[in-house]
Length: 314
Image 1 (cartoon, helix red, strand yellow):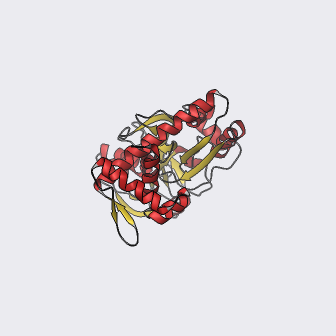
Image 2 (cartoon, rainbow, N blue to C red):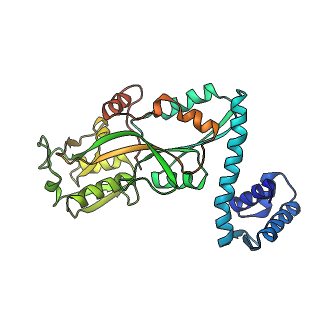
Image 3 (spheres, rainbow, N blue to C red):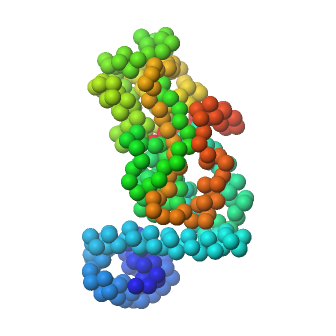
């Protein structure tokens, strides 16, 4: 089995089409097809289900794709490590992030990295935490800044804590709880909630906290951005548990602290488990802004420079 065969295989799997894969690789389609057939003979299994329009992976192909990506990633890391020793950091760095991170100024982080390592191509992808974690696990992404799942570290990734902040209640200015200095989670048992869609880790944190408090809640309004959530809460259509950093957003909503035990919203830096990060990824991870930060530091970061208004945490 040759590295070239794995590169061809991964490209066909991603394009789901031999012609497009050949064009992307700048090789003849006949040579690409012959290489894939040779690989299948060596492995004793068909890797693709071929049709006139596209190709799909077989079960054997799906199994190989994971390992092939790992192998190619390790090879790229080895090349980059040698280049780094020579002071010539190069290659590609794929970074994933949430869309609203009060603890971290991502543009500044990447600008510093680009200035220090102009030979590295930076790719940035935004998305929800579950999506980003899946891409890190699959080897499609080097590093991701995510919401830490309340159930602990998911399989296939390693999480390094970045920030932590308490959750607070958001309610309308005329709500019965708006004048409270603090409240217990038990006082929310009859409330209607506004929240993000199922599968968002921010919602998972609230679900876990209320389940631990033995509260069955009703989520009547599901949204996919912070501003809509706060607008519906301000209009008196429901309450929400949100990270403390939301209190600095422009809104008519009232925020009430919770009594212990207070659920925490945490962010973390995710890398793939069992694989050494590339030299470029290691250089980014060394940035001072990616060290763990307390909630007070999160507050300072959020109120310095740019306003904190943004779209949701996933």
